[in-house]
Each structure stands twice: as C-alpha cells, then as structure tokens.
Image 1 (tube, rainbow, N blue to C red):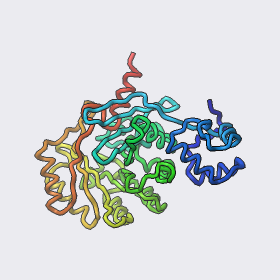
Image 2: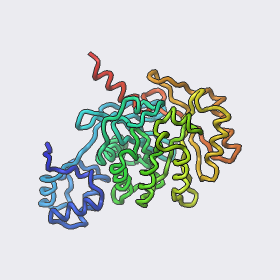
Image 3: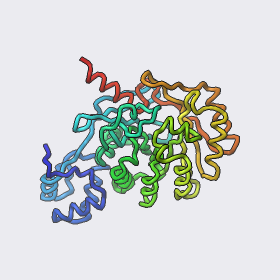
Image 4: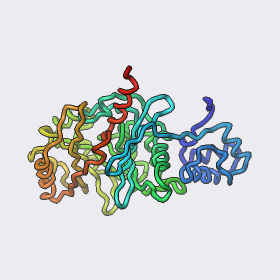
Length: 352
C-alpha cells in the first residue's frame, strides 16, 4: 500500500535519485547501488537490497515504493514473438512486443495509453488517447519482459514503436532513455535504442539538444503532403519538408543513418510514382527505408499490397541507391499489430 507522499523510485533519473538519497541523509554513491538493484537484479522491495544499511532501507520504505508490471496476458507466436498486455494501477492497459532474432532480442514498448495522433492506419489511434505513461511504466515494460526470459537471454534492443507517440510524452520518454543508458542499470548503448516518431518537430529538436544518444526513426508513410495528411493528421501541423529539414539537422555519427518508416497501403501510397517522389524527398539524407506492408485487421479499412507491388516499390528505391528493407511480418498468428490485443481485451471486459 502506498500513500500520496511516497515516490515511485523508478520515476527518478540517476541525478534525481542521487539528490533524493542525499536528502534522506545518506551517501550520494548509494544511488548507484539502488539503480543496480532496480534495473540489473530486478528487486521488487527494499528489503532485498541486502548490501544497503538497514536504516537506509527503512528510510526508503517510508518515503518511496518500487512499482512493477505483470503481464495480464501473453500471446506467443509460432515465430517466437511474444505480445504482452500489461494492466496498469488505474485499470488501463498497454502492450509490448518481444521479437527474437539470431543476434538480438528486441522489445517494442509503449509510451501512452492510446494515442492522440489518430493516424488512420493505426489501431492505437482509433482507440483515442487516455493518458501518458510515467517513466516507471515505460521502464517497467522492459523489466517485466526480461523476467519472462532466462537470465542468459537478455533484451538487447529497445524500440519506442508501441502504443502512443513517444515525443507527445516528451519528459517521461526522455527520462526513460536516460535511464536505459545508465550503467550499472540497463546499460544500453544509444545505438540499441530506437525512437520512432510521427514528426513532432519541436520535440525532435529538443531531444536532439539534450545530447542523449538514440537512433531516430521517422514515420513518413507518404511522399506528398496531401496523402500524408490523409493518413496522418499531424502532417497538417508539421508537413513533410519541415520534418525532413529537422532530420537533416540530426547529428549522426559515422555510419549512422536515420530510419524512415513507410507503411505500404494498397492503392494509397504504393505506386511507382510514390516511390520516385520518396527518392526525391530523401536525397542527401543518410538513411535507410523500412517498408512495412500494412498489417490487416478486421477493424481497419485498408489492405496490404500484393508482393509484386511491394517488391517493385523496394526495387525503385534500391535502383537509386537508397537502402530499403521490407520488414518481415512477425507475430502474424497473434494480436501483433499495435492495439490489437488491448482492443480485444477491452471488448471482453465490456461484454455481458
């Protein structure tokens, strides 16, 4: 049981936690010990932290608590992908997807309950926006998913590509990225953290200015403003050229590239003309394009293009020396698209 005066310890960054510890009358270095217990050892209460003085643990217990997430539902695909539905303390729920590959284990995490951007092809947007996730709720998705794996099988990559627009929850997203990179916490390299945004330009610029390292992925999904505004209303506020100019200012290290995501939708944005427009838009930007064939579901109006169209679109980009990958569909036999599992769970909850 927690009171209004208690603090969720995972909402604090490393510097916040150092200040917090000092105000309790203890040593600044003990924040580092706390972080190790929280993010490496997965402690769920302060009594587990046996190398901390008893009086320190008691002081922490009086003013703070350790939040956790436990999957309400887990779906496992034939390809090994796992989809988690997490129930939050207020009764709402969010999703994460764990994708195993030969050399990596990637977790796709959410930053909001629902989404305020209302992209036409996205189930999360069609459910509306409820609230932002806290820093702890973002980080707890990683810790909860890791608990489902063996200690030797570690999550290696994080992708902010689940429910919600990460930069619309700027403060908590930035704090979560900071804590993901802190060692001895999760200790992830910025190269292993990918932030996907629909193009909230002021927040993109703000996050760039922090010096935090991350891989930038931008959802384009169209090569002209009319089509993009139809699919993504945010384009009316931040049109393509504004988004791409911001991308040109993004500081890339050698061999780094910006990822542009392009959901291919039959008859909407998949023509040869669209491909050539996209080539012209991306000229001069070190990048690669992830083509994502639309993931069909009964709730949506759009269709996936056939393989001939998909491969033709890819070849048009490759012919112009733009690295272009068709992203394989993972978890096709489970509710793997953003919002599918949460939507189904809500329907079950609301059924008589």
